[in-house]
Amino acid sequence: MLLLALSCAAPGVFAANFNRVVIDAGHGGHDRGAGFSHTYEKHLALDVARRLDVYLRSQGINTTLTRDRDAFVSLSRRVAISHAAGEAIFISIHFNYARRRSASGIETFYNARNATSQKLAHMVQSAALYKTRARDRGVKHARFHVLAQNRQPAILFECAFLTNSSDRRRALDPLYRQKIAE
Image (tube, rainbow, N blue to C red):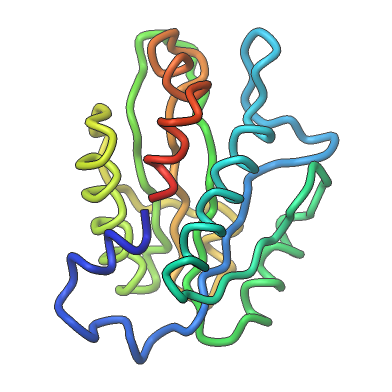
């Protein structure tokens, strides 16, 4: 996801701005996140995070995972890990939930206080749409803790709606999760 998005930018645009990608698998441990019929966000987000980690490392990009197993990590600890990484990009991976079961697609949120975050969010959203052909729910700014408290360029990516049967089927497909990672 990030490598394709970064390759869409003009050469060198981010070269001086980051040397690492902090990958945050949303939720974990006792915090299951969104769920539907024994399908939990924490497991899917961790799977995508691991896939993204392997993919980026294979491309020579340094990474840091906020969690590499099913463990709870507080929101403030996730931000602290991001800050400790130095010049980094932060991406938090999630799966969505909605009361309306017809809600579907992918969306990317960014830290509005950081102009690079908005650019990164648009590039990642565009690359993910190209790769998956999912419904475009757009790019939006939000004050989620991991975005609002982060000094790094930071985005939160929602991969699919677990409450939508079509999206859930896609989310459970390892090939779809690999496409999201790439």
